[in-house]
Each structure stands twice: as C-alpha cells, then as structure tokens.
Image 1 (cartoon, rainbow, N blue to C red):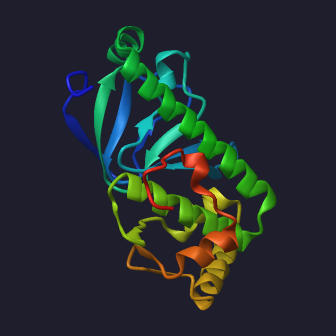
Image 2: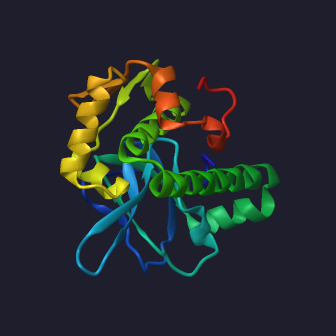
Image 3: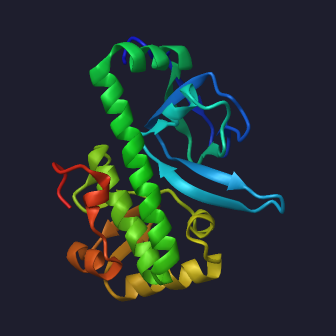
Length: 217
C-alpha cells in the first residue's frame, strides 16, 4: 500500500474532494483532518451521510463502479494520500490479504451507514446526537486521535444540523441539554465526554457495529 500511494496533498476547508457524477482516478486516504460524504439537493440543501477522519479511505468501490453517487468535501484542512485506481485494482486482484483488508473497510462503512439509518429513523434528537458523539470518540480512539474521553471535534452546529436532520436551533438546544445533564463538554472545538457510561446508556450506543474489538468502548 505504501508503494502504491502518491505523495500527500493538502485540501483546503470547504473544497470538494470528489463530486457526484465523477469517475475519480484515485482513491483517497485521509491522513489529517475531517471530511464528509454528502448529497447536494436541487434546492441547494446539503445532507451529510458520514464523517471521514484520519485512517478512512474515500470510496474503494470507485475502482468498480462507473461514477460517484455522492460527493465528498473537506470539513477542515485535509491532508490525504492519493492511490491511483489502477493500483487499487491491482491490489484487489493480486494481493489477497490486502484485498481482504480493503473489503473489511468497505463492510465497516456499510455497518456505520446502517447504524446511522437506525439513529435517524428511531432515536429522539438528544439520543441521536449523543450516539454520534459516542461513535466519533470510538473511531477517533481507533485512529489514535483521542486522549481517553477527549478528542478534537471541529464540526459546526450547521454541519451537525446537516447530518442529523435537525435545525441549528434544535441542535443548540440539544447540546445545552447534554451539557446540563453533565454528559459532555464541547468548547473550542474539543469534545470531552464527562460520563461515558451514562452517555452510552442514554444514546443506546453499542460499538459492536464498528468491528474493532481491541479498542475500549
């Protein structure tokens, strides 16, 4: 994989990394920063479907499918490594262990998407947002970007709104309630979970869908 990648590049905050309808020539590995998968609607609204953090690959499936069915943009300045699609195809066809690892990564992405569908469809606003905080803490631990129960959390209330199907006013009220309950602290783009067990119980969070048994959850 190291040999297959090109040099790292920097993408500025707000830049589109891959646009819907494109057939990208590269697969991207996030090394630093946050990005998101999103759909742009005809009325100009965005809906964020996933957050991408260090260690995440952007769409291995583009080596098989004809074009992107969603877009990816940088939520912060992002450093990423580019892997030519032909190199990924070569790995998938000739390196079984690496192919299995890439397939595993894709399956975990699908598991996260299923959990987000459940989260959006069944949980009340407070539990919905708390669940995402729990997920991002575990994923940040996996990526080595969290210190115990504290992590960088650069998302704005607008971006949380776009991902949770809630208005910014509602997001603000939910954050105030979670703070008042003594569950978390969010300031200066740092998230601190003050009571991990209570937050997990409150949001019905079970990290099993992330399939990383060696990370405390």
